[in-house]
Image 1: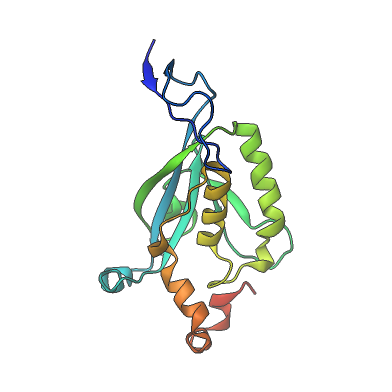
Image 2: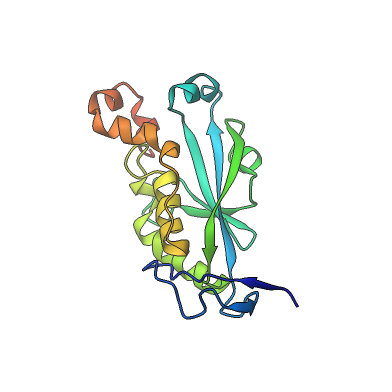
Length: 182
């Protein structure tokens, strides 16, 4: 049996539970499943703009061997979908290139609870509410990560969207179909 010090964190409050710092068998205080953020370069432009601190990224949250991500469409039902982890090039198209995986933490939610969370998030992240700068895949990944393990995604992943949201003139320079689904 493997033993380890397990500091348990409550996903919502950040407080440590009663098992903190005791020598316990792994998973003695509940299952802990890794929460992984998979990040993709969107288009080849990132090789030029990432050194400037900007970039166009797509992301998804991987938990229990499934990656959950969000995209826009013209309907009012959920825009969240499942895919094989790190496979956006195949499942979403040639403009998506896997960049890296970042482990954000662990969740104690089981697989069924994660599915219920995704269903509930689908009410907020509908296909027709997608917006490139104010409600995109990175906003979804951040929301899901906060719920699952109390961690936010790194700021650099959605920095360009935040910047463009603050400077509306830049949004007017983009084709409207890039901003919202048709």
